[in-house]
Image (cartoon, rainbow, N blue to C red; front, top):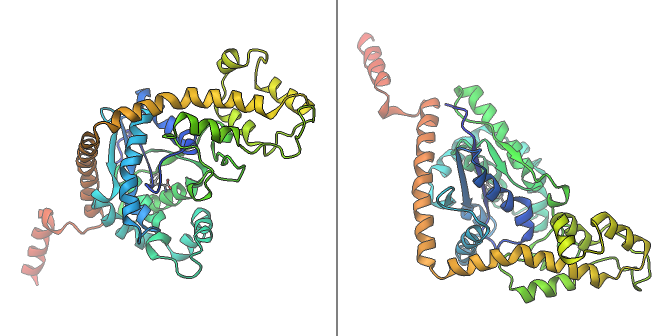
Length: 365
Ligand code: TRP
């Protein structure tokens, strides 16, 4: 039964290393929530089974990236003493739960999921969509509800998944009685962090577009990526007026810059608005703005990179941490599944009343 606990759950597909889009979209927030003391439990997991839904012929890629994502988590400050970090495929209860949820969702409802729609187009599946991929929102509902998560910190693209999970919970509770908890998405408060564009100015930072800054990128790579970022192509001479719209360097400043960065690296401007005003007026060169952004990025990423290097020194310990996390996660999932089976009346052998009732019924006949 629902018991008013506040529980965080979120995860990532291990299809690549994590980048700064993941960082501002969800990772940074998770670490803050983990440390806030406001939540009873935090679960963070690596969605390897979900990654396989569109990488079925590339299991090695998924396997390699499980450890990369685990290292990125630890580097960002997720702490196994405070958060349960685990691997999705190691919790078989999630498959079982997905199978039951499949009865509660229609094909047309899945077809309407806007995130899945876009992903199907991006992957050129056309008519040969794997069933597992098509139904991953259902499995994601299982991921969330198996842990009775109340709060899912995630990016905007995950909104349709959470909505679908909520519908499943309502339908389940309506049919079988109050058992599951309706989750809520926790979106970034800063609008630009909802969907950080790639360094080329394209809509989304994504591995396949080659426009990412990774959390594990060395300092010189970060420097190079920032210096070659997309700005305003009509801003040619320093004296030209520049446009902010679609100007990725300014979008990143919106996401990352804080007042103290100006004091430290650009004291001639009191704040971002003044910097923007000067750029729009003309007389401010792209390189100066990029140098400022590079300094901020280094300040944010250096501690993450250094922590990652430390964890990389003891890889067996990282696997051990994950193994323990899976064990703890499984206990919770098992408890929820016991309740689910009972609610669905498929708990034949632990229900003494059932056996007694049936015995009585047949004795009367
Ligand atoms: N779909 C998410 C992503 O692409 C990963 C994910 C799987 C997830 N299950 C989840 C996120 C449950 C939040 C909650 O990154």
